[in-house]
Image (cartoon, rainbow, N blue to C red):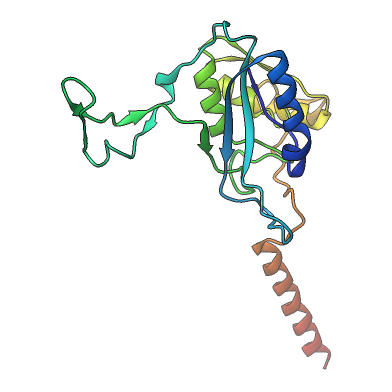
Length: 228
């Protein structure tokens, strides 16, 4: 089981996740504390350092509980000894370093950006690549994946794409409709056509906003010249 916050900003670090970590540490067994790092904190604060990571807990019931760990499905390139063609003399007989390795507990995946195909109108959407690693590691084909706080339904969408079965739950009707569409269950709900809402999550100006302002200034200038 994996646990991460569906909130963003300071709630992740100072509120939700520390409390969840303490609770889980008492009631369950923490296999890994994973750090998901990304390349941008969005709007840059001027009074503190920007947030460039989110914590993820990999947990199970107890230290003796069996769990799925498909390491062979998530191997990544080893960029140390193998890339430099070094020999590992710790082995008998000595042999080249492995070209592939199991990832560590610091994962680097880009956040979901506005112009990405997977973008949904949700404030804390997780990237498909992040969920793909989690699901490949901890589930097998035809097994059931449960996400009780589905949000943008990325977990369910990726689970189905990877040949798993998915159960996704969310109380928000807008997010529920995202789930219907992303999982392929339905393209309409109650006669309403379900489409991908590409609305931006921020009010900050984009390049197109500046172009629009420039065009409007040009039109105003032409109107002024015509009135003279």
